[in-house]
Length: 323
Length: 163
Image (cartoon, rainbow over all chains, first blue to last red; front, top):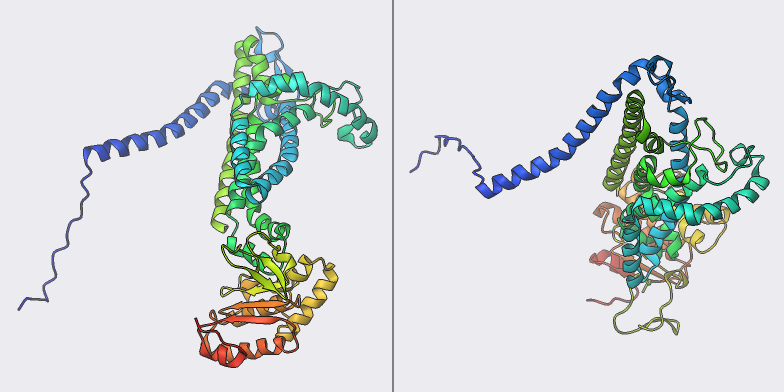
């Protein structure tokens, strides 16, 4: 008879990874950490190079709307602020989101619920293709094709809607306006917003869609009452991912927006601001002190974009949990 | 029968009208055929009133009219006063009553009940059967009940098909 009262000794559990496992785990961990390290190094570099600007100008660097380098030999004469550029970035990105989101919702619903399978595959591939077009191509196309069209639209728009301040153009100069830049950005971010919208709409609970049909509901009724409410926060996340890209876009905006250091919300006039374009415009001929200011501007843009992307990720993850 | 899936073979017809035979397909909203699922599938984002008003609204009834009919249907199943509640704030039996009200409010031609009382405890079933019998009395709906519970069959069925 065995002695059942004796407690067996606790076994020591160890896992012996093979060399291949260890190499694989190591390389995967390094890969994951590498992007974080790069991100931190970029932030540290920008902070290091731009720190003097923040200590010289403080918060007025973010709110000020004058960019005057003064005497290149005497940095105390410089007045530098990116307020107009920051407001311009937000304004163009906001226009882009406003135009892109309804189109992205419609495109995502069509692809997910209405399109035949062959059309769905073709449209999905087409959207991926649009997402891969370099922004300089968008910029050139926007300048060559979209600019004259937007100019033509802007004149009657201003005439009919000039009682609304944002449509008023006192200078009478249209063209490379925040509206043009925003419209171009909306075309650039539509694929990413559509892609996220498609994903969240595709996760809408099928049993509730069926329940809608089973009550005699139409397809639109199911979409309105089941799919759209369930995809709401996911769509917000997708829109914010698009917003992040729109805020950081450089070349396309550089070619289609006239930079003017003056905070204004008039979207049709040929005067706007954009932090990324400011950096691209000034970088080549900047004095060492101005270069530091551009680094500081880069850091502000970096942080704003990082924050928007972080919020987008949180919202998309939350929507996945809800669905 | 409700038009959620298409037939792979055979034919579904109601009063001589072909609903689905592989070539003809009548959309769910044009069939007057309503289903109560085993897991009920109440819309979690809507109030009880909006859940019940969903059918009439889908058939084009104005909001006020749909709400009036929904209130009447809720009263019939003994849930007057529950209009503003959400499905997740109801007991199993109450949710079942909402599902029944939601199904009969459009006065369907065919009512399909898939294990209608499977998600409630045995003690609640006789009362719910009573509620269902009450709402079906005077209804034009031809009702198909799928059930493993012999009491459901004994209480509610006129014709039994054993599978």
